[in-house]
Image (tube, rainbow, N blue to C red; front, side, top):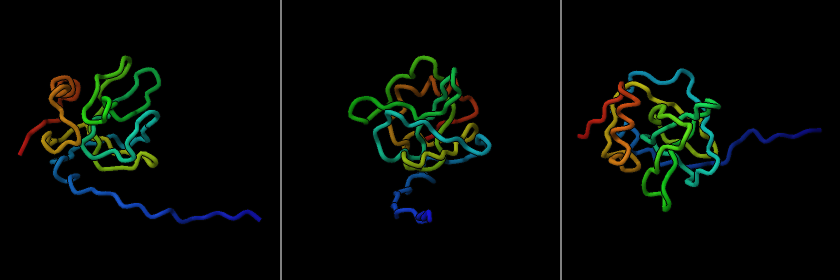
Length: 132
């Protein structure tokens, strides 16, 4: 007889900045998306993380991080900026709400936005970036 365990291991996430980084969420991708996290090292993807989409496959991914995981790297070829992650998720359960219209506090984002801010703003004109 087959036996299945229907309980998940307990996990604790720190979501303290979620409501600070996402100031207003007026519109998100309906139903969210499951992120492809292959090669993404951190175990947690925090709210405010930039989400990209591969144009050929239409797969959504977290924006890659530079060595040392302290900043965003450049946008990979064949990808576009798709939105901003609404709430913190585990990489192992990367079910993402992706904001496409609203406002973000860039000072509270998990990684500095300065190097990609103008490109993200141009690609996502319905998202405003306003610091408190």
